[in-house]
Length: 179
Image (cartoon, rainbow, N blue to C red; front, top):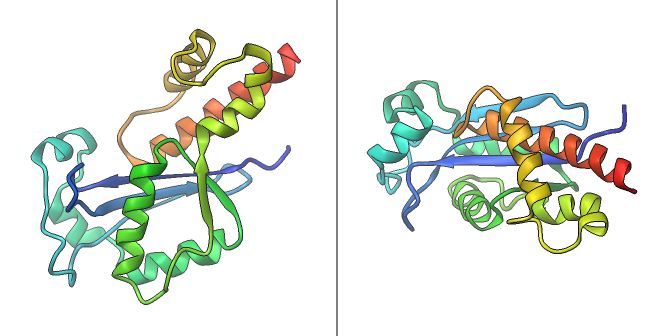
């Protein structure tokens, strides 16, 4: 099997400007997914919390405090696993912000990897065959729906990475058929 691109997803305490990451997941080239909760313990300014966000992702602050990894450990793990790679996100603006927030409280410096848009990657697979932009295209929307039907849930980092891996596989297959 051809190695997969690496996808990353983060969940956060809210969508506000003072939010912080609470969960991160990424896949390896073989499709294996690593996912970790992130502890806000020992980070005094990580106090933002949205009850609405908690209802979406189902992760309580108490769970983060008991089961979450320390930011420095997690940043070292990500840099070790992802060093020198391009990782793809379906929301680069937020994921960049939350990764910057995570790395800012660690002793690791910055990420040793770069983030690119998953939409750009998908367009490279199917764009020449269907034209236009990924968002709003009926063909892409159909692929997205098919991918969501194959994933257990939403709004958890591992599920969202699995969705992106599945969507990539569908788009690659569709691009090969159309090409």
